[in-house]
Image 1 (cartoon, rainbow, N blue to C red):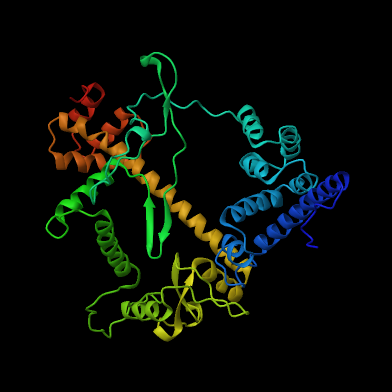
Image 2: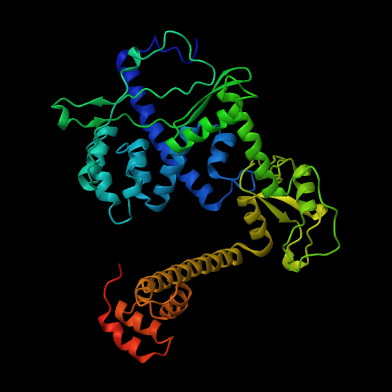
Length: 430
């Protein structure tokens, strides 16, 4: 008899076993989250040749994409707020509830929110709880022209090749007078690519007005080559052009490489174009990290050129000693070489330097705006545009000063006392 055939079990036994299995599953789920959280914290997916915890869960553990996302999200919030583990194990909250609560959970409010969520176990109940505890502003009222229902807009014949069909709206008008109706819209669908048959895929997405105009213009430019304006062919040619541009930028791809010169860059991290081309072609545009089990990292995005011998230790940018690594494994290799603490300090220093540059840029923009505000006043006094700009530049040193004071500073550039005295009675510029 199959172990999955339960027709022989009496009703009380069947129900008892079911309850026991549910309790066991909850405990197992909590233990699973704890393991996922610890693996994530230690970044053990990196030596296993995965660029992220998500990739590890999907390709190594066999989770579906949705299951991986939900469990990683829940594991990370539980790692930060350990009370979540017990709540899941005891069945007080389910994974969907944890994911919904995650943006709002803190070590200070976790117990209270979990207790409140336990009384509203459905997903809709959790959403109402969050709306009460963390209210969001109302959506702005809008009145829009909606397409007729889909059932009444289906064409009697297939659209012509290359025809752009406006997506049918799934929104409805709320009852009431026309002037008071507001649009109730369905959630926007994510772009998706769906396999239809061998070698054929359906692409569905929503584009904006600017993109629509570019698409129409591309069809017009290809009018002689594609009289029917097939969208698939237009997209294919557009991607060819984009890929060529990105390949030139990323690894200096070209059909006519320039002759090599003996001149070398003073920057030890500079990678010559011919080296980039050779490394990219050799590594197949894919991360080269290989785990101890022989698995190669599948990452093809966020790739970086990595020195096999660190630059700080005399490494040179040659095709033989360069390799492609994804961002995660490039950092992992550096940690293995220099230590996790050292690299953490370097990354923190880089973040602080970037923040300092951002602050400096903001201060510079504010100073330029303060100077630009003075220029109309100087022009109103009859100064030429170049004179006004040169004098107003002095005001960048006092961006917080009142406008009158900034005008005085600018006029001092001309060393003309009458003009300086007139600054206090300047008329508003026209």
